[in-house]
Length: 240
Image (cartoon, rainbow, N blue to C red; front, top):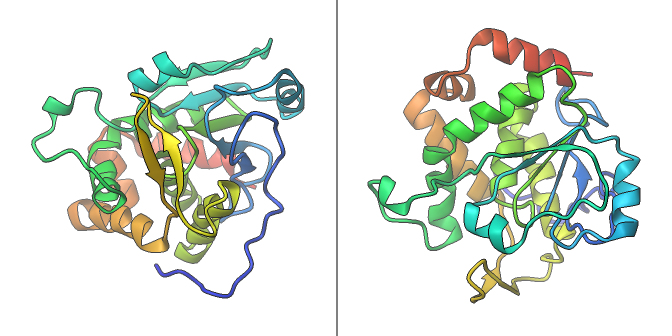
């Protein structure tokens, strides 16, 4: 996977929801149809106007990939929305539970996510395949890294090419105002950090870890408990 310099990003998938960053339709990639799966940043600054616009999407499920600490500090706002929310954190809750250094930068984060996200990804797949789960939205803090990997795995299962997956993944740079470089933000502890643009190589490092350790995305998911019937049900629900 490589970046494609000079190509203008297709911004047609973005949806303007006041108080929610980086919200867009994840469909139109592979056989994933439009209008059933969305991706975004968190809802912790969702405005009443934004909730009214969000209501038009008809969401039945919102999957939150953030940590317990993030949810406690920045809980999603609803303003009367009646979707079900599932908390399926991508990263382990206990740093002591992993036998390798916790990632301190983007480069180390992506293979680490691939190594630890299996249970979350399996739970996401099972929920999306359930009757009545769609339309659904997946989010983390800003919809860039944890959401990026989760959506890439789902798009891969729906037959998307590497190029299609990367093009969609890289749209977060436009959605978060990162086309011109890093921007500062406050993390869940109140510490100022820097949000950095994503690149195709970052996502490639996650998928390379999966390939190196399991051979394919379906085999990786199977190692964490998914069945072929569950993947078939997912594809039937999400396919055009």
